[in-house]
Every structure is written in C-alpha cells, then in structure tokens.
Length: 494
Ligand SMILES: [Zn+2]
Image 1 (tube, rainbow, N blue to C red):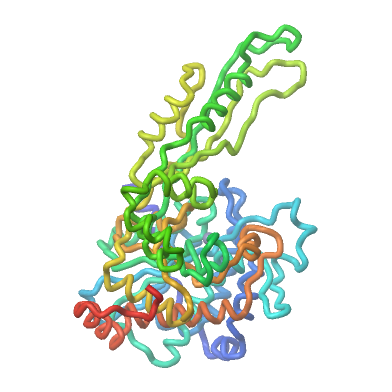
Image 2 (image 1 turned 30 degrees about the vertical axis):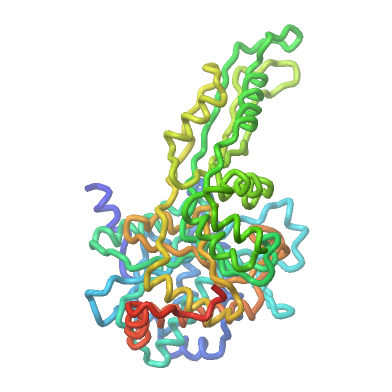
C-alpha cells in the first residue's frame, strides 16, 4: 500500500501546454538527424548506484522531446513514470482492441575513461558528419526513441487516426536492468488492467555477413530471450603469512571451482525457437544441411556438435556461464581470508535458477565453496509464436523497408526492457530496424558509436509502417482478413 501511494505520487501527467506554435516551427526546421543529434547531447547515463544518475539530464531531455515533437506532445497523453521514464498513449478508436506497446530507452552506458581518447568526435556533442550522427546512444537506443516519435509526428501531421491504441514506453534505466523504468511502466499498466496485443522492443536487427555460410541480409526477430542470473562464489580461509601456506588457500579452492565449471558445460539442446531459425534459414544452406535439418532427430548429435564449434551458435543451444568478477587478497605476503567470484549465467529457455544451481553444485562438488545468487534473477522468456497475424504484420513491415532480407525468428541471448512486459502479452518481438555487420556491431557500447542518417530515416519509415500495419484502420482490417484466409503476407524468400 505504501508502495502504491508512492507510485501514485510519482506518476503525473506532463503539461501538454508547453508545445506552442513556436516549437512547431522549430520541429519543421529540424530533420530527424538533427533531432537525434540534439538528443545525444543529454548525458543520460544510467548507473547501478542510483546516486550516480544525473537525473537533471533526463528531465532536460523530456523538455527537449516536448519541443522537438510538438504534435506528439499535444495529441498524445504523456505521463512521467517514476520521475524519469516516459509513457505516451495514442488512443485508438476501438477500445476492445488490445493496445500495442513500442519500447525504447532513454539511458545510455557511460563512456569508459580508457576509451575517451579513441573517439574521433566527442561522445556527447551530437556531431553530424559524413552522413552519420555521432555519439553515445546513437545505436543504442536513442535513435529508436527519435524514430518512433518522428513516425508518430508524421502520422499526426497527416491527420492519421488509429483503431488500436499505441503506447510509447521509454524507460530510463534499461542498461542497469530496467527495474525503475520499464518495470514501473509495466506495473502502472497492470494497475489499470491493461493487456497488450504485442510489444516491439530492441534486441536483434538486420544482420549482414554475421552468420557464417549465409549470404545476404537477415532480419533476425528475437522471439525468445535467455534468462540471466549472477552467482556469487565465496571461499573462506584462515589467513596468515604467505611463507607457510596451507595446502589449499581460498584462491586455490576458488580457482579449482572455476576450472570445474569450465570442464563441465551445460548439455546442448535445441529449443523450438532455434530449430525454427534453422528451418527458416534452410533455403539459404546447401543441400546437405537442408537434409540434416529435415531429419533433425536422426542427425541431432552431429548438428549440435557443429553448432558448438562457433561461440555465437553455441550460445543458442546451451546455458552459458562465465566468471566476470574475481577478487581476493590485498597484499603480496598475506594469505587472503576470502576469495570471491561472480559468475554470470545466461539461461537457456526450459531451465531456471534451481536447475542452474543444481548443475553448478554438481560441477564444483566442494562444500568449501559457498554458492549463492547475486542480485536479481531474470528467468528465460516465454516463446513468442510466429503463426499469428501480428508476426505477419511485423514481417511485412520489415520487408516493406528492407525488401531483400529474409525474416528469421531467433533466440536473443541478451536481455532488454521487454522482460518487464512478459505478463502483459505473449507477443514480444525484439527487433531493431538497424543494419549491422561485423564492423558496426563493434561500435555498440564502444568508442565512435555512430548511426548513418540513412538507417535513421529507414527506422522512421519502419515505425511509421509498423504503427499503420498493427494499429491503423484499413491496413489492420485487410491484414486480419488476409491472415484469416491463410494468404501469406510479404514477399520473403521462404
Ligand atoms: Zn539498448
């Protein structure tokens, strides 16, 4: 109850009066790229420690958005959730239709001090150069905030009305788990008994030359996501002088435990989503692979062994764990009394915290190692079905903007804000309308992060079409009708 009251106090509606005719003029002059450059200038860096947040930057960004997208801010209901996240409601005419939610995030990861010198352009000045917008957040995820708002702004300009309500949900702490942002937006919607038709979030993208042996571009749509868990391993000892060490120090015992985890990986397993991925890709593979996939149960061992060889595909077929933080000792001649390690676990769908703990205990087989959960556990997501009208709508939207791609449902190995919406819908799609290759993928969360203006413009077209295809008037009716007749939508190479 106390919680509920606190929540009520933190949710209030932004004044829509701030968008005057002045700002309309400003917006008319600005291109999407200039708007993105403007958004980059706000240092909305999120941090695990809430005291490290520069909340003023988030508030200033809200004001900037109101100015840059005046029609959105005068036509949509704008709510500030938990002080720094934004929820926009574009009301549809048919209330019986479940709304669609477009999710993006306002926060960015910090610029590491070690990478500062590697930037060709300053990370927070929003430089426009050589057809690119430069800066932290251009690729993840501010371009999507701008593209979504720009798409709505364009539709409003044309007087477009919706059948189905659209929510635009912009969290402020995705990079640190999203519990205060998307988590609170989700709670806010649940309190109003909202159920959603679908959520469209970041995740996978259009990839070129990323999957070995596959030519041409693929639009990978994340229809499932792995779970996430951190384990804290602790070993205690007696300390003392390093000149007369015991047989096993805490460092020895911890090292052995980590070694055992490496020596005992989780069993490989094909989940339905990954099988669907390879079935969709089969047309692009050689005859031999097609045959093996067709008779999967017969060639199971061989296929799984092959997939284990590449780390990208290995991550699709098993729970993976890796030590990411390790600490022990303070002085070279003093035996540490404690050694600890944090092991990050990415859980394959079908397993959970309990089964992971069992596996880890069995692999380590040493009672001197204390094993406990560290931080929050995110279970693997439910699997989104692809035999639905809304998947078809997404697919034809993708093909409208990227006519030459093959649309492929796939497992997303990371986690995004969409994990907070799993109880509001079964249809969660993790796809960003961004084209990445091996080179550009390296720029995400890195120095010289930049986005081409072309990608930004395509993203605006993508969200414009996605809103029309899922929530528009005529388009929606046609789509549902086509789908119910079993006519395949889109022109994919399947
Ligand atoms: Zn992101």
